[in-house]
Length: 108
Length: 115
Image 1 (cartoon, rainbow over the protein chains, first blue to last red):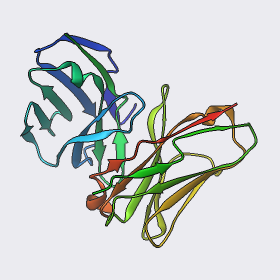
Image 2: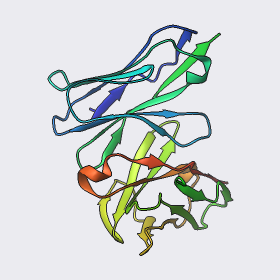
Image 3: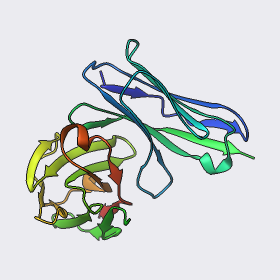
Image 4: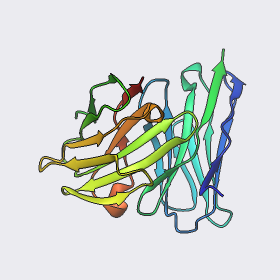
């Protein structure tokens, strides 16, 4: 069983939709939770970083962590075509473990 | 503030050759980690260096090696290249080790093609 599970998609939504991206994990040792965005042919860009259960908001992005269920989510409000990218969850205790990434396409 | 710089951006090598990739971290960052990204396996951790010492290593064969210099710049080397080594190699820098190393910033990557 992989330590981090993430549905690779692809996920296609219309502009303006609310997008929900999710990862589940099995190791309760994970303490830090991140979301990265990766455009084609680019390196991953850190979007959100949190180390506690609950919600963290940054503009149109909200990261949610539920340690009891070992479940993390990223919500994107008012999605834009420029949000089209691959979104990777990453979890850490002493090293980063990445999910497979979810490809998101936002069409006008 | 300059980001993480990886050179070269693209490389084409022949099976059996060796290759060296370079990474300059963000100024003030002392930890550098290397990852291999392929469509089938995703992002896989290779190794982490902090203060010129390897602190963590992933499950890759000994053909993959690295080092870090006193200015925190890092190189990784792959010897006896195989077709399966074709991938995007990403370097990530962070302030330090342990918890301080969990907030990582990536470079643009080096795309290696082995023919």
